Image: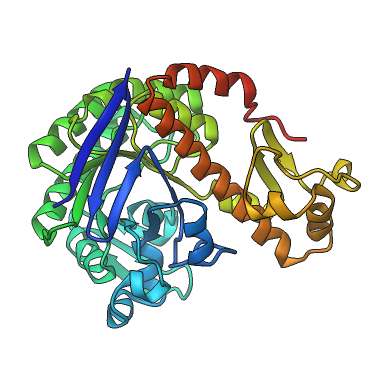
Length: 371
């Protein structure tokens, strides 16, 4: 059982604290993605130095390699990867569904072929709960099906209702312990009636938290915010709300404004490996020639090691030379930027100035501006 306490609210924005078996998580929170037990190009110590209080791991990838039972033999994922703070694990549903022709869905579960070896696996709500238990996840996600958008109302309805039946089975299979919790996942595509039906089904089952799934899959920010406007506020006030797989800084600030408490996305680490840096005023493409002789830091307002100790010119050189250090420094910077953004959001809500912060952010930060 997880404990969640709301400390302050401003409009729909919420400032809270989530207590878990491996420590507390201050919300709104961003979770760096450590899919296979590592945040790419980062040590756990480096990730912790950014202010991150919780990481995301993935059931699908960890069940394939190295295997949940093997991770359990090391004492669970925390000990295996040397991360003492909380961990949330995705159920594997999204990854399995993305396999397209390599999987088959039935009422019982999903049969799929490993993208690594071609070996066949059968994943059910019960097995997903077992794997996440073996991983020792502080927050376990219910097994669900994520439909690719756009999709017809009939397709979304069929998938959502199956996911709700799987949610019930997930709850029945979950081993409840102090400091551990299970989140249900709201599905329903971009159809309000389906989202409302999903919320009703999940709240009747009862979960420690509620995730909003099936977004950030190509529908665009305007449509995503429209769905959040009628979904987030319909979820229980006394439980954390998690928007899965989102996203860009403007997505996150907009999500908080609509009542979301938790976020995750591969964007800061993936962008760090491809030469993109998130800054206070937009996105830098560090491969651009304009940075060649630039003696300034990535972001004069940032205190991460990359900004304190290195110039844009040097980091540009690293990427042009194909040096690993470029990816390390830029990933470190990006995750630090995201975690500092969350800290600023939390402070703004505490001080009842979040609306002003939101408007200032929109004016200063051009999310699509790359230079």
